Image 1 (cartoon, rainbow, N blue to C red):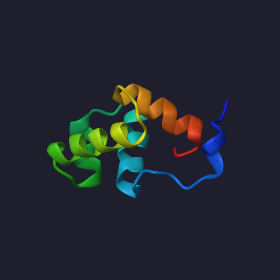
Image 2: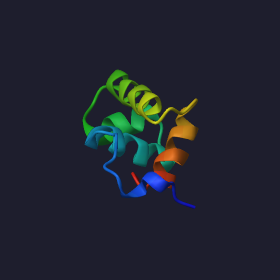
Image 3: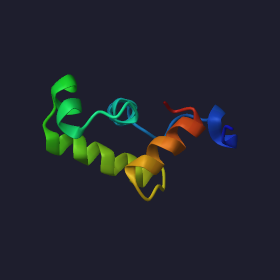
Image 4: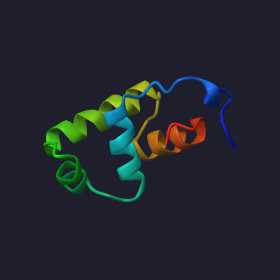
Length: 72
């Protein structure tokens, strides 16, 4: 089921979308950092930013919300 906002522009940046997409495939922050040539701290910051922008409580919720909204 998709959210009514599926047609709107994503509130996430390209990097936030990338880290959420990789997290949705069960990749850990260290693996995501290596794949995207980022530090682990930067990946965690992107997670935190995405969680806030999506008004989620956890990273798992953020992934679910992003998928429902068509962001991933």
